[in-house]
Image (cartoon, rainbow, N blue to C red; front, side):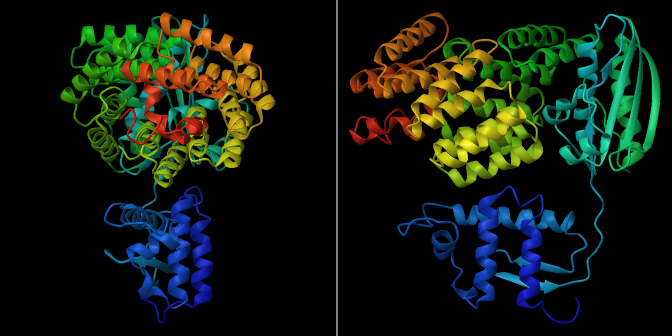
Length: 571
């Protein structure tokens, strides 16, 4: 400890440094809590920082806030302690001053200490491997190799690995390595290329410093396709050994043919189209046919069914029991597989409607892999958003964004949460930012249309939905898009167009998946409240996934005002 406690001016300067850090700038609730408690302590009001006061004054809870019923203060205080510890272990490791919260106390303590250098955590981004084969047939192999390297390196101590969704945004990019590193928040980049024919490949791999493009390590491998498992492990071990002193990661897969089926399935899955998802299902199933203990393939089957359900591409009663069986099989084989727990949690809440059990399963997934962006994403939208815990939902979405900064679905669904929290201006800005980064991501155009409906900007809503329909490659999220378009038509007085949308939604339900939630939106805008309620009852009976958000959909306010939709409806 150095002499003297820091002055108020020094504490405030230190506070601003923390708030500007990457760990805090995306979490508005933690920023608010930290600033409130620090300023209260500096003003001599530290003794007043009790749970009720912090909840009402610091976190904006109403005067009726009951700490015994709502544990948000304790939950946020725990997150704040954890986030501060992470800050002082990384970006703030050389800071002389500290803001500390003792366990059980909401009053900060300000200290001046000699910083102890922390072990550096290196951030690695694996870029998509270039496919330089003569016939271009190795696309799945290139992507699968890079993705498996991401998976293996994630298990290396002392490394943080950028998620695939973000790093693969730079496929074919001519951006400078320094720009790529900056955008991904990575100080190391792995790039590679594959040459050869359909049986034998030459793979070159390089590890680069993102600061200056300096080549830290490079190697070349000549392998037959069936040697994929050996190759993945060899490359991952070489890279990990050059960066950390820990035990090199090893693959859990044992069957080369099954491994090839798995990486082909991942390649298809990552297309995020109906054709790709169904192709991935076939390949995952083939992988489990070869090796019934292929836990990752079982988890992939579960994820495919969940996405087909949520995208309106399959009937819940057809796909969700299959999803549950696959997820349970994956968990039984490998209880440490975070993706399996996350998929199981989604199934438990969407189809089984066992909300507390789903919360525990999400917590299990995040305990196993705190960097699992999909678990944070689904935890936010399926648990916190449904239960109106908007602060926690936004925090989880911001964490998912931090882990996958260039993911279009995650960026879009941050806007989705803001919309359902009725922060329409911020939601629209988030949707526009997503569109600017991902112009072809039609879901964000449809979301912007939904937000415009809530703002009574119906002409803008129609234009946004028509743009979304123009960009849509398949039927994914078609019910959401049509429901929004129908609502906008009805609200602007174009009843015939709205009724035509209703007919299209009903035909879609008869052909493929439930659309009652969206038909209820259009009926509400038409003033047919009995029809809206009947459509919601049908959707609930069919276990339509979108019913999980029926209580936080702003456009159903007319139903709430008439007592047709209450907190106890459809639970």
